[in-house]
Image (cartoon, rainbow, N blue to C red):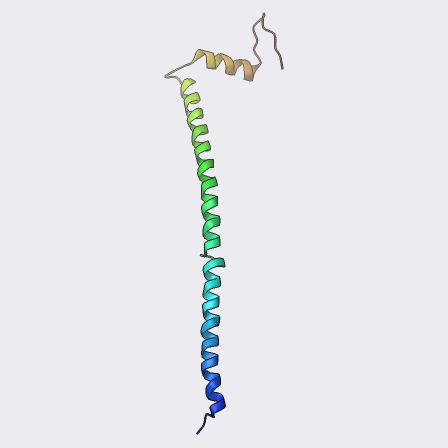
Length: 100
């Protein structure tokens, strides 16, 4: 007989040890791996922050679109034009006082 009684006890032990180590590896990969739960939570929190930033940028874009529409050839807002001319070109009326 090639295998003794002593070596027969080691084979099942090695098998269960291997199964345990593989299970431990997969459990760790489930939690800490590239597609694990920790990474998923981090991605979800980043997604919330990026959604908030997107909402802010959409608001800013809509304000800029409104402003450019008000200065377009089709629709001219004289108050906005006056404000922009005063700010950019430094125009003031003779009776105005500038406070910084």
